[in-house]
Length: 238
Image 1 (tube, rainbow, N blue to C red):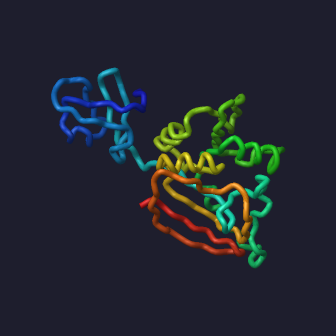
Image 2: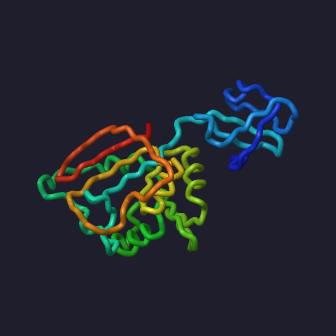
């Protein structure tokens, strides 16, 4: 089984059409035609290395999407000035509405969290039981403790982790938070869908969802849904 290529490399001595056959093998290093190839620049194909001088192009099935699903205040904060989230509620006008969370939760089987978000969930919101039981959770931390059956603590670069997960089989990947994790993935263009619930509150101060970026991201509005004073906005890249 090949090892996924992460570095920039050159494929030589092969026709451009060779890249579009299923499980095509091409040699690296011959002195004839050269083509620079980078992982991910051929949509629908994965790049692996069988040997030091041979690369394999495999046709992928439908790629998993990395989905940001999060709530924020009307003025753009995901936590208040103290890091609290007690304000995450509607205006009481339609308390019986189920919202969109349960339907969304069924579409994912993997969850990405930063260490602060994990600690807030594990220590404050649900200290007795891991709230995402049955899903595979990855917690990004520079000092990973021992992983458990359901939670993997990792110091891997988040971009590498998400790229690899998107190439695996499974349901979509939930980018849960926090802001640092989200903005690193936005900067790397690795978030495919953005689902934001606007909460009817203006906090004035707090933890902003978005930070400054070097490049813009064009979006297409897929749906709008309002209930209990909250509004769900769903965007995809275009």
